[in-house]
Amino acid sequence: MARTDHRPANRFTLFVWSLLLVAHAAASVVLTVLSLVAASLSAIWVGLPLLLALTRLLRGHAQTHRRLLGHLLADGPVPDPGYRPLPDTRLRTQISVVLADPTARRDYIWLATNATLGLTLAALPLTLLAHAVQAVLYVWLWRWEDSWYALHPVAGQADAYVALVTATALFALFWLLTPPIMHAYALLNRRLLAPNENARLAARVEHLATSRAETIDAQASEVRRIERDLHDGAQARLVALGMSLGMAEEMLAADPDLARRMLTEARETTRQALTELRDLVRGIHPPVLVERGLEGAVRALAITQHLPITVDIDLPGRPADPVESAAYFAVAELLTNAAKHANADRAWVRINYGRGRMVVIVGDDGVGGLDPDSGTGLPGIRRRLSAFDGTMSCVSPAGGPTIVTMELPCALRAAPQAPPAG
Amino acid sequence: MRVVIAEDLALLRDGLIRLLQAHEFEVVAAVDNGPDLLAALTGQRPDVAVVDVRLPPTFTDEGLQAAIRARRAVPGLPILVLSQHVEQLYARELLSDDTGGVGYLLKDRVFDIGQFIDAVRRVAAGGTAMDPAVISQLLAKHGDAGPLAQLTPREREVLAEMAEGRSNSAIAGRLFITDKAVSKHINSIFTKLDLPPSNDDSRRVLAVLAYLNQ
Image (cartoon, rainbow over all chains, first blue to last red; front, top):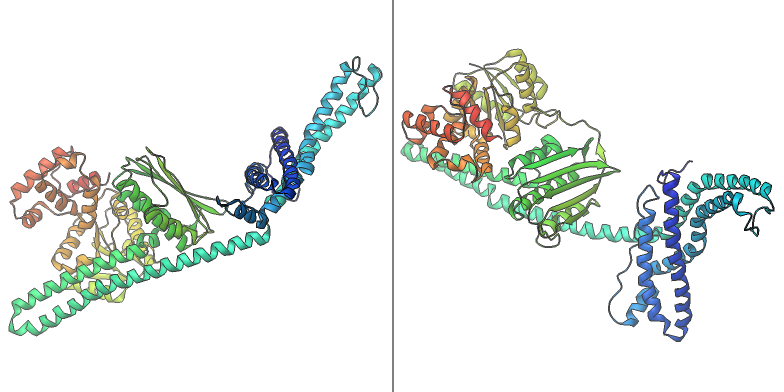
């Protein structure tokens, strides 16, 4: 088969899935009937609230189906079409939102199709298998039950044996057709449920506009901070240094002792300027990241922490610099969180790569209760990641543990990493 | 004393050459990249080398890698690594062969010429020279718990000085105490940390660093 976008699965698994999908399609039938009733009642206005409730139900139903399809399709669950939130306000507003929502229209088209064509497709494996079994049973059953709808009439034992041939044929059909049927079913439903190209592009443009604005804002404030730090720090110290040196030069003949003191002061000022520059550089782009890449930098970070940290990194190459940097700062922020606020005894960092994305997991056994939307740290991480279409999810029940998972779509450079020393 | 220098910035390389020559070192090679450094280290077998961590062609930790590789080929080859920033990871890697003759200092330490020259000589003699920034990070990491918390403030000071690689008399000079008092503190530190006593200065420093690096 040329297309390989279905998940390879054995026939038994596919059959069980077909049963589940039949049940799910049956729910579609119920919803379709209710929708038709509600639609006809809408003519006299009373159907509208019902239609509204059904639309809400339908969203849930369609979302469940998107997830179910994920088990049959190689590329995972069908993406959400980007539902508009239904306002919990006046009925009239809610109705106008639903009527104007193209995703609701698409959902109803899917519902009708799934209740008819979808149900038929999903039920085919079960039908074929059931009839095959029935034909086998006819070897005994024909005595009591002769009014079989039958592919051929069964009037005696001999005919019943002939039914075995039918059974074999039906079973063969079941065996051969189940995978393509389920594949076709999954593709049909994906086509109807996936956001259409326009909606997808619109959502994409909206996301890019937001993340670009956020990135530009973050960059601008970062540049302002660097400017302020240089202006008040290293630059000011270099001015003081020049003054000390100038005065020392002037004093050299008249007061060598004072000149020496000025020189010592100049040396100290230089040292302070260097320390400030070093801290600044570390905040912009840690040198160890340049020297060792993400893996080495995270290991270097882990051994400086006060709590024991298990580091498990499996990257077949190096991601682009900005991605490395975003991931590094995210890990640093989360480890600091674990040590400072979570009261953790140990923490762990896992980084690996697959299906075009780098997955970074940072966890700790602390007190939990980390709110990804509060403070500046985690929202900052999310903003940084979103510039690369990265996502962050946080599980942190009260009492712990806290596990933060970040996913960053990226390509890896095949360049071999510097061999680990030691 | 024959020395090899590796530094890619001409300004700093010339400064180092001038500085070391003024203190009776013979600069046998001054290189500006990783491959040349490795060749100079294994070819010249200098008494000591002063090496910048970041070097061309990759501008990664090429200098450090060359140093580690050279010490694998020539165990105990004395190398003092200089850097604009210090990483505990790098210190750990340099120390991991458990042989003396290593140093790891911030470039700023060059300002204090007396101390710097002392560090170079110490490394050449098979001792160690660890940056105070590394040692204070290591001490801070051990925190308030564990055996380190049982040390008196004075013992902590002595431990830090010792971990930086100084000899008993140098520690005595810096803390304004007698050699005898230093020995007493060191014995007490070794008992509290449950380390085997040793009379060899550099072995003792390595033991302390290994302890702190746990």
